[in-house]
Image (cartoon, rainbow, N blue to C red; front, top):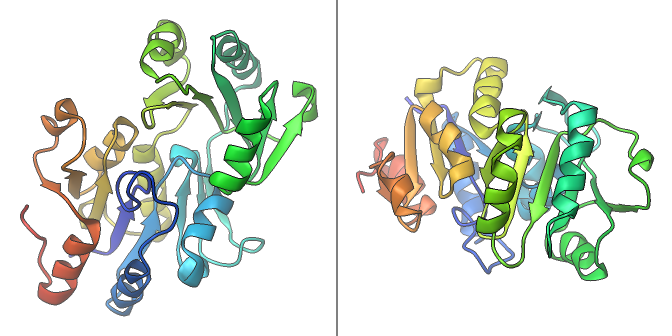
Length: 267
């Protein structure tokens, strides 16, 4: 019996290159809710950015944000309870930030609970995060201006994440979890989407075997491995597909089939 559906956003529910979800998804979420099935976006995105995507149903959902580093319950943006938060240790976090900034062509994104801090960055990156992604953004001129706990640090690599992954991969994965979160992004946290899913299920009282999960990238792997019923997008890395044989081309198609038949679609 499916009680909770968790879905990655970019490349999974939201095709790359698109900025808005298909409105039919909101109808599916309402129909799922009527059958007692909860829906939770699970993304590396910020809480504010995710809420904007799900406008008509944004107050009805719980959210797994920042690759599982922070979880929110349902409610308005100001009233939604924080269900779990995993904080990075300050000293190594500062060292990671400096190592990212030392990489040619890379920008650093520093995430608090619901604010993105940008440091020593290009104006175009500020615009990308504020206007393109829809984040709450604050530009800081000193890292000491960041007074809240840091939950995620990301490297934005316009030329591709492969070279920075090698440069940072020798040191930091022994301290933080490093995940490829798209062709241009590397995310570092002390949590991951699998940890976030387990925390969320524990809070909601839902067994992991009653969860359905969708993802398309390596940062989704812990969540897909933890879920009772994982689907990998058919567009994913072939090496990832070797680990997760059940695939689909459309999240809405799987959800529609579930609503109509009560069964999962075998893709």
